Length: 324
Ligand SMILES: Nc1ncnc2c1ncn2[C@@H]1O[C@H](COP(=O)(O)OP(=O)(O)OP(=O)(O)O)[C@@H](O)[C@H]1O
Ligand SMILES: [Mg+2]
Image (cartoon, helix red, strand yellow):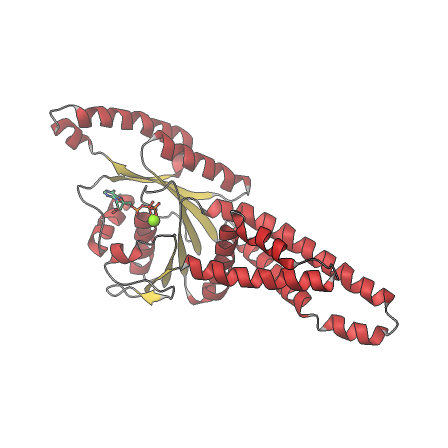
C-alpha cells in the first residue's frame, strides 16, 4: 500500500512552520519513487532543508537526482531569483500598458505599488509553481510540492483567483485601448496590422491561457491533492483546520492529515518526573480533537524520534509507520 490512498499527480504538502512538512513531503516522494514512479520533489521554502535531509547538495535552483534513489529528483527553488525575474516581467507589462493606453504617468509609482506589496512574493512563487506544473508535469509521474508555512498551497489557489481577475482585467482594457485606436484611426489597415502583432496583448493572452490551464489541473480532484502535516498541539491543528476548510471550499478533497512528533506512550510512562506524562496527556486530548476534526482523513501517526530525521533510512522508517 502506498502512503496516499490514491494516485495523484500533484501533491501539495502544507502545515504550520516546523511541524515536519519537508520530512513528510520527502517521505511521500521517496515512497512513490521506490514503487517505481518517477518523482520530482520541489521545495518552495525561503530557507531550504532538502540538502540537509538527503545529505547531498540540492541547492542552486536546478533539478538534481537524489543519489541513492532511482527516479527521485529534487529542486530547491531559489525564491530571490524568481522574485527578481518576475519583477522585471511585471514592470515590463505595466510600462507597456501605460504607454499604450497613452497615460502620461511615470510608471515607476505603479511598478513600486505592484511589486512591493506583500502578495508579490507569493504571486512570483505561484508563477514559478505554474512553470513547474506546466513544464515538468509531462516529465514525471508525480510532483510533490513542499511549501513554506506562509506561502502555503491554499493561499496560492486563493491567489490564483486574484491573479486570474487581474489578468482578465488587464487583457480587457488592453483590448479596449486597441479597438479605440482602431476606431479613431484614419489608416485602419496599418493599425490593424499593429494590433495583430501587439506583443503585450499576446503576452497577456498566453499568461491567461497558462493560468487557466494550471487552475484546471489544481482543482481537478483526480490529479491534485493536499496533504497536511500537524503535530498534536492546538495551534498546529487549528492551522490545518483552516487550510483544509479553504481547500474544501475550492471543492478539492484533501488527501489526508499526517500527525507528526507524537510522544510514544511507553516513553511517557518511563519518565519518572511526570513531565512527559503530563505532555502525553495533553497530547491525547489533542489527538481526540484531531480525530473529531479529520476522522477518516488521518493518514497516520509518526512518533517523535529522539533525534532529527536525517537520511534515506530515517525516511524509510517514517514510510513504514505511515503504512501500518
Ligand atoms: N517525527 C519526528 N521526530 C523527531 N524529529 C522530527 C520529526 N519530524 C521532523 N523532525 C525534525 O523537526 C525539524 C523540522 O522538520 P521539517 O523541516 O520537516 O519541518 P517543516 O514543517 O518543513 O519546517 P519549516 O516550516 O521550517 O519548513 C527537523 O529538524 C526535522 O528533522
Ligand atoms: Mg520545510
